[in-house]
Image (cartoon, rainbow, N blue to C red; front, side, top):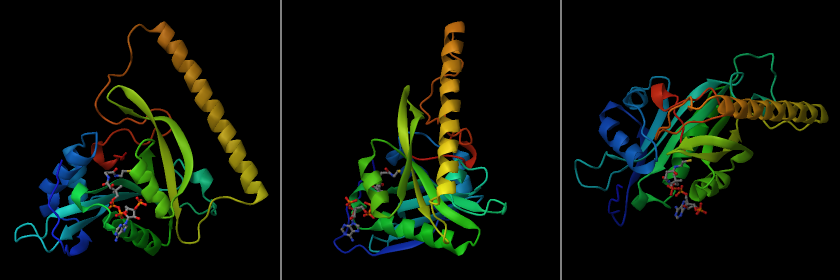
Length: 255
Ligand SMILES: CC(C)(COP(=O)(O)OP(=O)(O)OC[C@H]1O[C@@H](n2cnc3c(N)ncnc32)[C@H](O)[C@@H]1OP(=O)(O)O)[C@@H](O)C(=O)NCCC(=O)NCCS
């Protein structure tokens, strides 16, 4: 784990992540997250392929380190229609170009925490999302036991919309996640009676599908002696979000 000594007067600056950040970015992800990300993910981040990313640096560190990342946030734009939160957005569904910004990873070196660095990085993301007129919300998943992160997102005015059961699969264990959303550009969660009925029906449908899938899996398990998937150290969402499979190819997620 990176645990740098923080100078008594750090001079924190924020900038977009660039190719020269590759090695440090990869190291920080390795230190802060319980999963391994593919090198393609880091290449996409530093080269801005389909991903936007900001870093924090401390200019008061000695030469050679004064531009080294001590925090980062990465995010990618997704189509609202294809997202799992389409039903939780109150927007004109006839408009097909609506987008969302999905936060992939966020981290700050331990010794630099509680200085407001993650807050500033998230503000960059919010500012960026608000500047895109088609963008309706910023959203993310967080593993159920990551209390500092959960407190942090609440403090940043994110709304916790759902608990997703068994969303992650890490080292042979399933874990739930929370889905947090921050609405931008006048978007909001549904609140008219019709919207709430639609939302209720969509939940009921989802619940029915999930129950059917569970029953189906139980049947399959009975029928097959061997499990179909190999367990891995990777973070695999299981039921709820089939779109995001692994950290590979920039479709990663964080915990
Ligand atoms: C979650 C995480 C990113 C927060 O980073 P951070 O830079 O410490 O966050 P901030 O400083 O912006 O805010 C965190 C706390 O510091 C406090 N804070 C904010 N600005 C502050 C300031 N200027 N001075 C003192 N405290 C401050 C906040 O009130 C907040 O306190 P609370 O949430 O305990 O009530 C960090 O803990 C981390 O990297 N964790 C490991 C990776 C991880 O879990 N990522 C998130 C995955 S979902």
